[in-house]
Image (cartoon, rainbow, N blue to C red; front, side, top):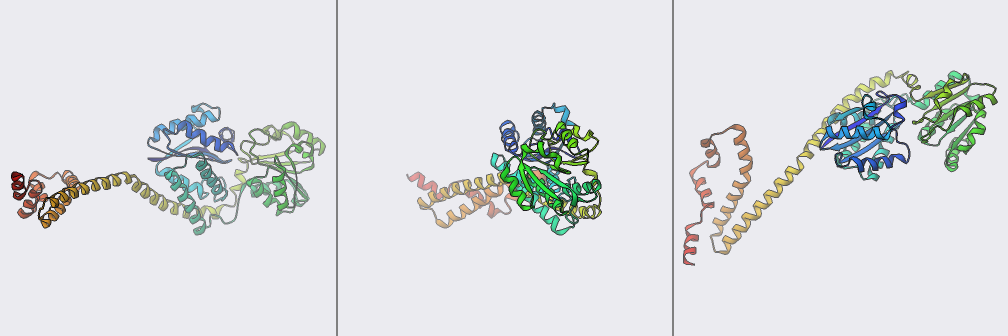
Length: 440
């Protein structure tokens, strides 16, 4: 069994393609179940990691080449694309490359924001989803558990998590370029998930004039609103109240845009063309891309924030080199574990054969004792027979490897004449047994 990863991320694919193959909310468990049903024969274990920056499929397979081709077709079909359309944007990582990649992802070294910690929770969600779908096997379970342990080690032994930088923090810095004082703005958060919670934390620290959370579930919006002294409303009310806000941060699991061009145009008219700062952190996007063409709107997507989050990362880059060294050591440890696991069937077979030989020789010895043979000779014969049979396989392998001749082989088996006579005794009945057989 070999490990394999096929995926695409913010480095290999544009946002327009990533949102076509993203799995959000409840669609992730359905996708995991569908993946198992369709490719389970070639991919014995599987897990899907889907975030705003990446969609990756981790698997264990006896045939990596076949599995890679099947996964490429599956992910293309999900996005309504042809395999050749996604081929140039995907990467396939076999064996230790999968292990190294998983460790780097968990540690935040492959993120748009170097060292960000949110990906670790998203990986844990992917593991839980795979478990619910029944596609998480021993190889992937061990891979992800090791990934979490490596991520913890990296964060405790390096400064990779220092000087916290995130997409949410970047959004605040961009807003400060548009508005002189965040304290004088009104902020609307669309959605109530982890990303919105993080954004609300950063904006709340700037003490804006007012904050409001809009969500499809009003109860969830109210729960989040209470944490930040923010008001709440249902998602359907946005159209009538969008003009009240200076800053809009959106991140929902909707498969279609929920803030359209016409809605924003009406809001700008009501605002008398005062600037409107909008951040779309969702994949697929919550805000229609055409909104960015409006002259009084400053719209940023997750890709647009990339340049901002790269600033002030010198310390993290230095820590990243230390983290890479930790990861390389842990990759080697994991590959040793994987190699030992491959030997388990052979070891089990060896144990089974040894037990069969033991039972055979024990039964033979018991029959000899029942016939009245000398117990000392029977015990000696039993020990010699077991020793000879247990050593036969390893000795034969050594002889084959060394290319020993027949004379040398005989010397290995029969180090002295007395020993040879004892071995010969195992393969022919004693005179005493022969006489008893004649008398009967």
